[in-house]
Image 1 (cartoon, rainbow over the protein chains, first blue to last red):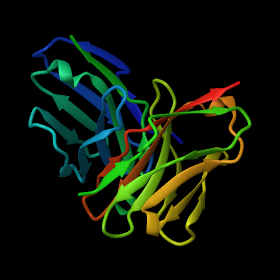
Image 2 (spheres, rainbow over the protein chains, first blue to last red; image 1 turned 120 degrees about the vertical axis):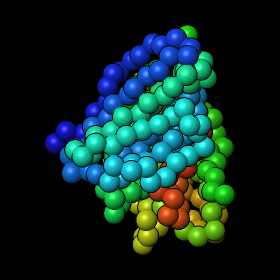
Image 3 (spheres, helix red, strand yellow; image 1 turned 90 degrees about the horizontal axis):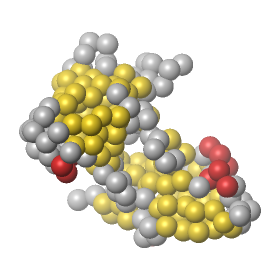
Length: 113
Length: 113
């Protein structure tokens, strides 16, 4: 049973560029949440996708956007990258009926220079 | 607003000694409570969860946690730590119907040989 997978593992971008991160949920899960984890901090909720729609959003600017595909996989897009966007980006999957019980992928380490 | 406090930034414990990591939350009703562990450069692994019922919950890797409503606490315990337990531990709370987990800042566990 495959767990949550994320790609790429690491990414280096320049300020002002755009980036797309990808996530495949755990088999059987239909809900995907994205989190940003800055160094030395706990994760911060970005948004959650269910039935291909953004269901809930945290306190992040519109530069952060996402998408969920019919196979439940998801993308996180960040435009106009800032140095402060450097972080570990975590994807978590869950079932719609058990949304708080989330299973996490290994994350994508984004470095903005 | 909901919040989670982990008062200890790091804790050092000798191998074989007992462990208790503290977590306090702020929420008007009983939330869903979680403990996750994160090894360096890795994603988050769910250790245990509390939704309702018995206030002492058992998790993986020999961990347990106790929910105390009167103290708004959900402390994580292990009777005897192993060197492989060295990692960062996060307490998280899910509350209401906003679908997001609220996280503490984490406690880094250091094991002395």
